[in-house]
Length: 318
Ligand code: HEM
Image (tube, rainbow, N blue to C red; front, side):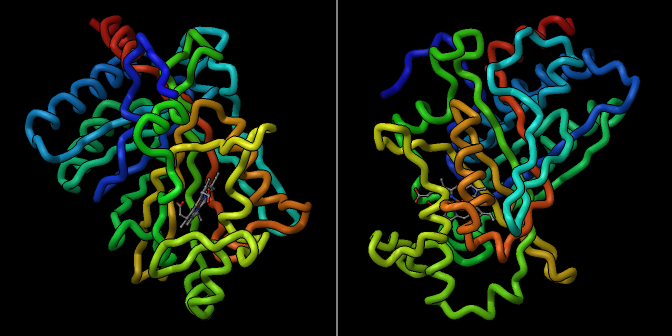
């Protein structure tokens, strides 16, 4: 299953950690962005190395993704990765997966928030003169890896050898082999309505048992549950997977609780298929019940170039 690649990927197959900072940036009109980008390429490499040495058990990773418009503006190779386009919204009968702007995305993970904070500060110091930060979300591990809705999040993710296969582009796009399609959405939850449900009703929303994290069998799992609609297969019945690393975030004093959805995949079409099933429904109108308690505030597609590409641009900055 594992593909040999001459390319060194960014750390898109990393496992969930205790702390995360996600940020989405948009270039300022007229800013000289290429030299800034070249410096960032060097910085990403530097941060990953530096924290691995400084905090050996910190499990640090810093991953940078580039949006479609930024790819063109930065003069990165053309044609761009095959499926890198601006995300187009998906509207169902009741809920919409909105599309929002974003030129660069940073995904910073570490055991310790101090590491995430320092990495974010280094990035901001270089990027702020040339770009505005549209979103900065500080995510945290909630108990035993649960979403803020109380269910363990990530169980059906590919692990081991499968992880790289599903997260990294393979031979289908040789120029970008080892890269990854990164898709993010910031969701806010209606916790009052969610908490008004009984545990049994919540379990039907996910198609899984809350305490044990065991999936319901097909004869009891509702066909509008998250598990029934988010799981997709190819035409031969093989599971199509993506690597997710969602994180809860929130401000209790403001009554705000959310999930930052993030996925890495070898193709964006798998992620899009999942979104269509969730938002439009199967059959149409039978949408994912999770959406009655979760509203997407953002939705942006990026591409994560290989470390080799980042190093090449970093060298250009001298
Ligand atoms: C409100 C945001 C979301 C929350 C809180 C959430 C939470 C969860 C939870 C708790 C599970 C069950 C355990 C597991 O991770 O396997 C799950 C499964 C899954 N989710 Fe989500 N999710 C969200 C949005 C999404 C979105 C937007 C997608 C796809 C674009 C997605 C794709 C999946 C997939 C593929 C599975 C595994 C399904 C299976 O094979 O059983 N999720 N999610």
